[in-house]
Image 1 (spheres, rainbow, N blue to C red):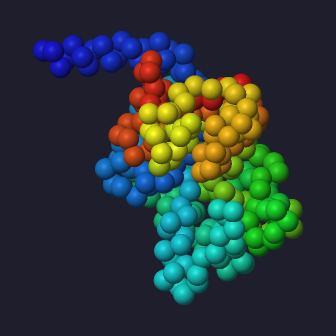
Image 2 (image 1 turned 30 degrees about the vertical axis):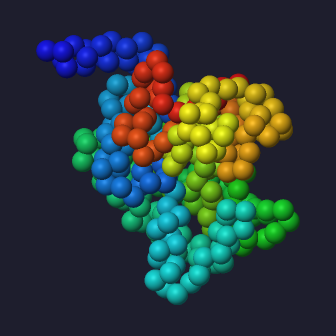
Length: 286
């Protein structure tokens, strides 16, 4: 009986959040170990299905860098990275699109539909959803690596209006018809901003934003955009934590109300963050 009472208390704790977020758009950037471990993958899919069932409007934007690297290796192509971004020639861009829009996207769609949730996989070229341009990093040309210059939400809006969860592969095109591989984090931020999303959630392989990257207990549970800027400036947030903080900051600047970094390796991290008082990751607000 004690266990049943605990379950009831969890539901009671979640009720205000369910009422508050019903009808809101939540963009989930899905990547890292959560895409590799089958048990964790099921947990994430169940969380997204639950969000949909209680009236939220999830949009999934997924990565797939490890899978791309694996396929390139099998084809005899060595992956080269500059500032964390893959140098991408035309052939690599075609392979990346094949992997992202093909096997990964369709698997996620199938997983959601196995939970009774209708889903449709698209990439940014469909409906001109992600219009991109060539991205230069510190003046270096990475090839067909793009950054989002415009998000057309017509196809996303239509899918959600017809009760589908959009599953978006981060591939875009420019006005000349060139195909670009886009960093999934920044694609998710751009999509969340264009949709006026209530929340943007990054599933990663860290607990959240840490003051000390070697101390999990130094996690910052909540911080504002200004606090994040100050923490980076004074060195409190440093090293590998900076890109994660910058992704959150980018989402806030795009107009998202709150951005979350969660450890995707934690079972049901999405539900624990959104529907409990304590949360499990870092939440950034304006």
